[in-house]
Length: 296
Image (cartoon, rainbow, N blue to C red):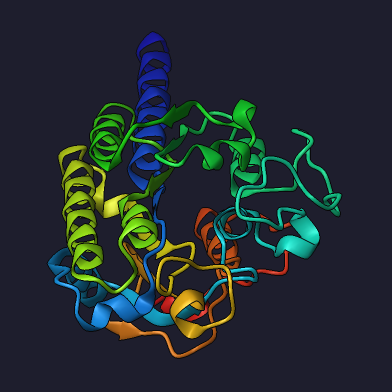
């Protein structure tokens, strides 16, 4: 009888271990990489081997669109909040708080975002935001994230992001690069200097991808690359396709490979797609829809 009890106990412990191991193996990660000012038109001339490889390995569109205005805060907010400015309230380039009352507030007194949804559904999640433009810091609930780091320059962003990925293996990480937008404003969009900045960004994306491999989570990680807006001359915020069309690339487990998405994609669909990947229930106020065409 004694040995029978021991046997049952060992069987139970083994079952618990295997269940925990299986759950750990299935843990899903999403890395959202956003590049400021990277218009989709730039792909015609840009030397971006890393991004082109991502396109071959995943699904993509060069016809995703921004919300209006084609400016930073409204679009960075829409990307993670699943709705447009008329609902989340961030309407101008550098909005530090909603210019309009948010239609709905979550437990962090902000419009519902991927951050708050994931934290509520999975309280133990490791969530990070690493960014160059300080305006990003006003567009997410600080209390919902484990990592909040504003860096000086894209080299520092890449270094911080790669270190964080290897050390913490975040469930969700948003990485913001700013070099392309800065050059667009100072020298001009579509200039040789602009394309050089894009090439530098491509190299940073390669560094991020390598850190995912080194962290041992590549098989469980979905990577999304996109932008807040494009640009024309030395600005953006108006109505032109060079300002409004942005790249949208996604690669990872369960994602179709070498697949061009023909369906419409709006930047707020990014949040809905991330929610779908994590199995989160999108709030009623979101108007974003998951880009289902990317899934196998």
